[in-house]
Length: 163
Length: 170
Image 1 (cartoon, chains in turn purple, red):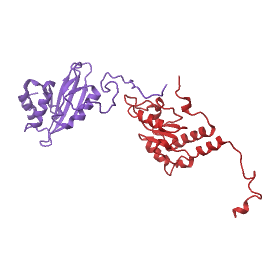
Image 2 (cartoon, chains in turn yellow, purple):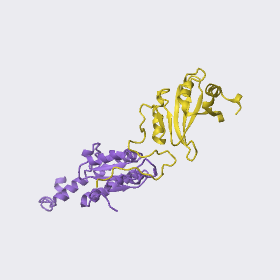
Image 3 (cartoon, chains in turn blue, green):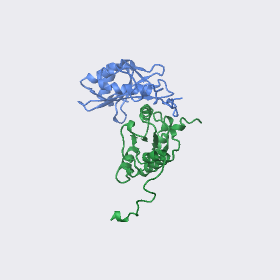
Image 4 (cartoon, one colour):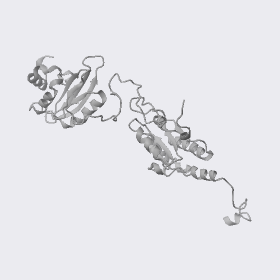
């Protein structure tokens, strides 16, 4: 995409972080940036504090499993600015053998449970999270159910009749 | 007036009847079912309809719903049970006093229904002995009546309860 059609937020992100921003696009009016996971907290803190960005509301965080691709996992942040009324989507890819990314709880405390959900469903580890344990599934659940290689017919052990 | 219609010398049979203690208890038990409704999904709404005035389950003696398992003798599981809920349901069943009966109401409680996924228990008979299953998604309140009547038959005849045949070995 040509530089002049880029939104001000994406242009500022590329100017500030350079190589840490892998790619950007604004398809259908949705500003999206794929960034390197090593600098994710730095980038998110910048988006929150910069006077042109002011993304004070982390609307959503989710994981994606691109089974068969490498890197396999992706973490997606959807941010909104109540002040500026604009949105941005930040993505970071993670390798299968090391699905670890820094926690954004220090940037927005409200992202706490989203990170726990992504950890529960995809097994993505958020380094520095204050309470990273399962949130929807129970302790003792085996596996991460939204991974594409989780068997559809897999059943969990139940409290059966005592033998 | 009514007194005049009585046959002379009291009722026929001399005013007493012979029966067995078991039959007497079974008769009393049959018309005083205390159900415990474990309603987790839309089946619970149909249970309310079943206890309401239109279908009026109290005609069959099952009107006093007890929300303590210690006071109930029929467990009516109405709705989806997932793996997280399963130990809770098992605990409630264990808290009920013998003799006790279990009704699995609806497709979810009977087999998991259309929730063939990672989180739903595929039928409560994986963890509990079930006496009567009600098909439907959800069943209408007549289905509940149609399950209470066989429970009454089991009580009346002394037929073995599901818990006496549990666990089923195949």
